[in-house]
Image (cartoon, rainbow, N blue to C red; front, side, top):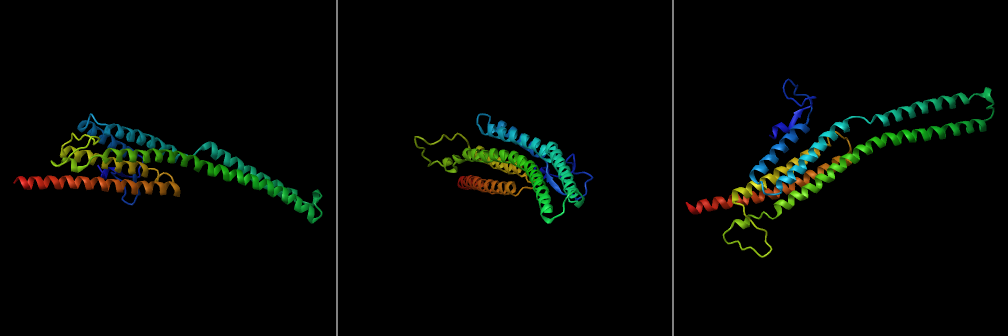
Length: 259
C-alpha cells in the first residue's frame, strides 16, 4: 500500500509507460483509497469503538484536501483579470505622463517638469500598489484554505493520541491492579497491538494528507507547518511502537515460560 501512495506526475496518476525521469508526487486518490481501506479494517475489527469515527473524520478531511488541491492549482481568474487591467492602466498612465512632458504644451521650466513628473509618478505608484495587493491576495486566499485544513489535521492528531494514551501494556500483566478510576481494558494482547497499529497508521496518513499541500503551494509558512506536523506524528508513532514492542516482548516471555 505504501508503494501505491507515490505515483508519477501524470494526469491519471498511472505508473505505466512513464519515464523514470519525471517527478513523483503524492496521489490524493491513492491516499484516500488507503484511508477508506483503513477505516473498513477498523470497523471490522473494532465495530463498537470510536476509533472508526476518527478515521471517518480523517477520510472527510482527505476528500476536502483532494478538492482543494485541484482548486489551488487553478488560478483565481477574477484577480488575474484585475491584475491585467491594472497593468494596462499603468501602461496607459505612463504613456500619458510621457506625452505631457512636451515643451510644446507649456512646460518651459524645470519646476513645471517636476510638477508633471510628480503627478504621474504618484499615480503610477498607486497603480503598482494595487497590482501588488491583488497578486498577494491570491496567495493569501490559498494560504488561508491550506491552514484551515492543517488546523483540522493538527486537532485530529491529538484526538488519535488520546485514543492510544490509555492503552497501557502493563494492564495485560496478571499483577495489574486497577483503581476506581482506571479505564476498563477488555482487549487481548492481539487486539491491543492491532488497535495501537491502527493509531500509528492513522498518524502516518495524517502526515500524508498534510504533505499534499506542499506539492501544490510553494509557501514557506505552509511547508514549515507541515514539517512540524510530520515531526509530531513521527514522535507519537514512535511512542506507539514502543508500546507494541513491549506487548510482543511480554508475549515472547509468556511463551518461553510456558515451554
